[in-house]
Image (cartoon, rainbow, N blue to C red):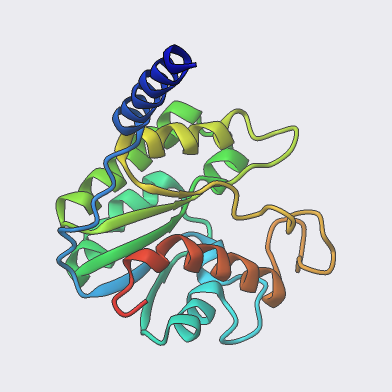
Length: 205
């Protein structure tokens, strides 16, 4: 029995060390900016939502802090990268919530191109001592591996990840305004998911 307990202790220590080494190095203690910025495409802009019911506006009310909505409908990872400096880096970012990649997927942009652009976006955000939070997208049957690539990028970069912001929303007529955009209620769920992700990093939470 003592031998078994000894071996169990060794196994537990080894597992702990493995997990410690494997976990992404999420930057949390050196955040220096002032603003929470939502950066992305129509999912950030709020296409399909009633006025004031886009997810950044709802998230702002949830946490009681002003949030910058830097969403542009139709944005790809490439076009977003081009406006990153003006719309994000120049605005004292502290936490940046990212919803990008859906238009790359829809437009047939290669997965490597899309995620190289996302990796560059994350790198530039982290260089400003801000915390990037990826909103992953998983679409049944035609996501071309994009869903798993969000997880891989999160692990490699240390960005936080909401694994699938569309979970339980996509395909649910009660929560969708059209085939690809949530309605106000759908955006409420997305706002809650981002809230849960960033809650440990909010002042006063």
